[in-house]
Length: 262
Image (cartoon, one colour):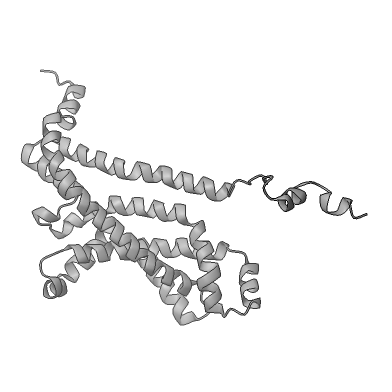
């Protein structure tokens, strides 16, 4: 008896009935939980990453070295290992504070991972700002902290927006690893729901459906990254002066300002 590999592949991953059965729970339970995990971790990781970036470029050694060690550790560890270390290691404390809900520890673990990467992204963005910007801010009377907070950091953040969105995409995918901590039925994210349906039916179509949801979330973000990057590189398009303002028209004409004064 010969086995048709294409037919086996189709029946294993493209069972529309299995997908239709899993779809409602994917939308009502899995999708919101995935977004909660990813967006919350991205916001917390961004706040922690800015602190790490400023500490990493500090002239004070006791600020710079801990930031470097933190970044090396959480960038070097696999995401699954970090989630297990935080989620299992701090589980007794979590039970006392908020009960049997693994989400806070899962979000904390994802935030620690994201902050290590975002700290380097923010640091590179801050250091890409020309030194003359800081000098000009200091000349205007700003202290070093005020200059960093009001001038340098905003410009650096603007330059790393594409990289920040890329990290959000990575967090959306890494959120699937939170299932290691054990989730209640109402806490399951997309991957866990697909995994449960696949285990119950013996068919992998629900997992493929979960993968399609991840594509729906990440592909538009990828195009947003490309659009933001293109706009930042091109800058705002120059607008031609209108006839409503004669001063602007005079300035726009070569030699108009100085040629008539000779």
